[in-house]
Image (cartoon, rainbow, N blue to C red):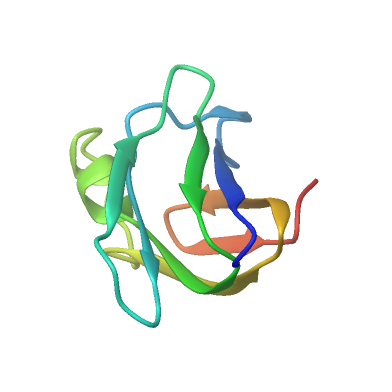
Length: 106
């Protein structure tokens, strides 16, 4: 039996130094299955996606988010592939119009 896990993310606007609320985010398993879509809350977070351990991808609709603020960006979307572990995996995104970074969160 495969152990369940959860995945969360947190998007921060690195230019303004505050959460990026309203970013559309999609979580997909790389080996198939229905994608799960959400929008970051007022604190820039999406939490509690239930899934199974294994390879995943999170896609952030950064171009739409910047366009809604009339800010040009180099990245129309950001995709992060990672391996979800049993228990909980947190994937933060630090975002600006012309750069981004990520790391394994806790």
